[in-house]
Image (cartoon, rainbow, N blue to C red; front, side):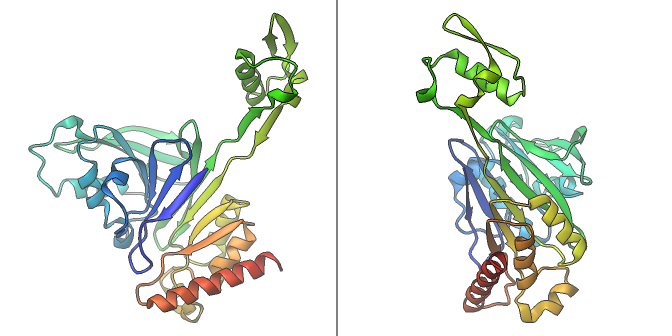
Length: 319
């Protein structure tokens, strides 16, 4: 369902592009330096998710902006407190006298706390920030295919971790049905999804109660994908991660420091090899992918870090 691709090399910053099966739009997590991100990909992005605005997570927004101007669509930007003003400051650094107001609209969803976010719009050429609404809801983004929830982690500043969760899919096995396909199939699915077992379904001139037909339906659990960036490796953060990402299928998690640099990780409110692997095990994640490494490490050191992480994660999972 979700296909995630790193658009940054291990020696660059961090940027993850997410594609969804049978879905036209793309979704970008983090705006770090990303040499593999193409113009066409930028133009197909429907939403951008930023954990925090340290330079290595936000530096490439200018390049994305450059490619999106003129697409005449609304692009959602999700991020931590102050993200609206920070995006506005970036776009206002340029001159826009030749750009029409309909060139693009940015809808900014600024997370305030675990349940609240504020929505703003930002359009050229003056880029005035207009607050639209405050929303009390833990779902920061949703469409007809999936939803995105979040939790705030401590990185000495708020750092947002995101969970993409596809909705369960309900299908019908017509080979087991004594009827031909028709409008009743959609009606039956709706009754199931809305938990309306007593709903009447009309099929070929006869009426049936929905729950007598539910055995024909099959429900497939939706895919899940997590993105956990910079965070201190302390119990409060780990508790949030375990609670929010429990049983997630795939998670990209920060693994900024090697085990021998654990003391520096603690000082800088970052995670490190064993902490990231252990919290993924505790959350019962199926596939954990370590990303976002300190630029002080040579390519060979990053390869070893990843290898050590995977060995520990697999060992932890089968312990």
